[in-house]
Image (tube, rainbow, N blue to C red):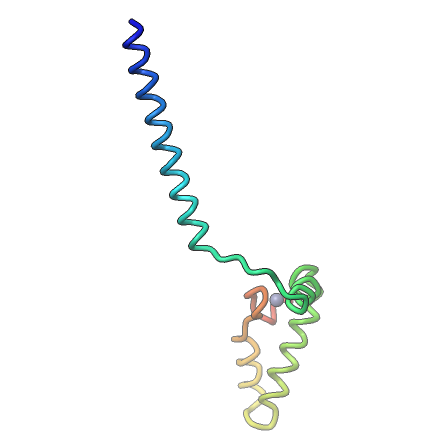
Length: 98
Ligand SMILES: [Zn+2]
């Protein structure tokens, strides 16, 4: 009887250990797939002011930059199309979304 309990305990702890190892391996792999980089202060400021609070000031700045860059080179319709196709490098939303 003692031996049977021991075997069962051994088996269950082995299964637990394997499950734990698999979970650890999976989480390690996940951690390696994602890379976390600290925001520099400029990025953080932009994220908080434009994309965090949704007041859209950075998005308006991007729209102005696109407009400035294309002014006098293409038609107004093409400028509007370029603005509509541009996404925010910080939050990934279209810059017209704000
Ligand atoms: Zn944004």
